[in-house]
Image (cartoon, rainbow, N blue to C red; front, side, top):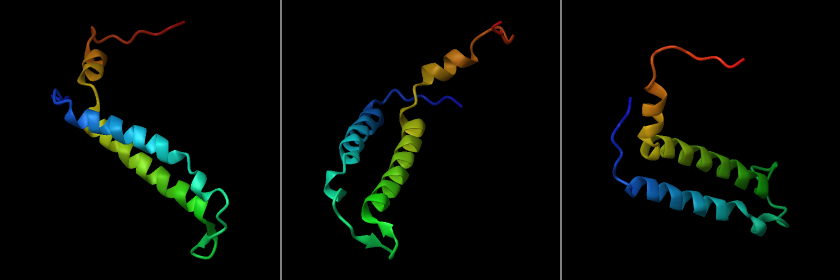
Length: 86
């Protein structure tokens, strides 16, 4: 299912979000915080759990809105035979 994604707006927003997420991964503000969330989870661990969820949503958005069609076109080209190495 190849969609025409010639609009570069969503791809640009995805890249900005990736850079922002990269910057937020450096969580120096929780290094010495001994606060427990829900009575058992260190705040730094909770932050990284939330960070992982946000990263997975961002990846899903990237696949949905910024995946290059040329990769799917390249994969579907060919003569129908599977080549093997070896």
